[in-house]
Image (cartoon, rainbow, N blue to C red):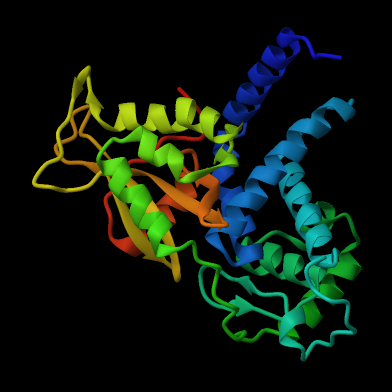
Length: 317
């Protein structure tokens, strides 16, 4: 059975309207997810999962959503708590204790300090109350529990505040893959770029869509990105003084690639407008993620790297 094309069109239109209506809530949602997960990448993933779940749940809710911020924060809290409580299939089952580093739950208070060794509910309660200054009643509503339970979680959580040990370093894609991507990108050689990908690779424009297979990636996001980067109006922009459009950087110990865009709309100099992360499998790119529509994550990345940024909003214009 094949789904009708008009159904896909209707869903895409509804999704874009949902993204538009929730734009003003996105900075606060990102800060909350960032605080819970302690990571730019995991925080952005939690934002996207929250939006998808919130969008899907609309079809099950008959009454109007009068407090959309609380609606999204509650979904984010539940998703994160469920994920933390779910055993990692890659890890052997053990009776881990609070003293076992592998069982620690690390969360960064983005403004001041780190929260570690807290249960999921304790951590969510501390972040909502102490970081975002929600009242006890609001925190209880978001987490779907009672004020008394929140008071207990806050008391226990605050008692456990400590700076955790550094976690394990992220798995790095190989230098050969990243250098090959940068060289091929700056040479505008789409065939060389495509050859770096596995045939079954995926590419995600975070928040907008996913492409499956190297051929689709080549003919869609890669080709589009190359064209847009090198266009101002309708004429190609040459590389200036040998400067690259794709450039490799280290962000919190992980290699990433940022994309410099040609000047436009009155800009006098080039600016960064995208960041890319890679996963490698058997010597080829298995997954590529574009953070073009993630302004909070891009702002944090470029601020740390000292790079000029122009953000792109949360959706296609």
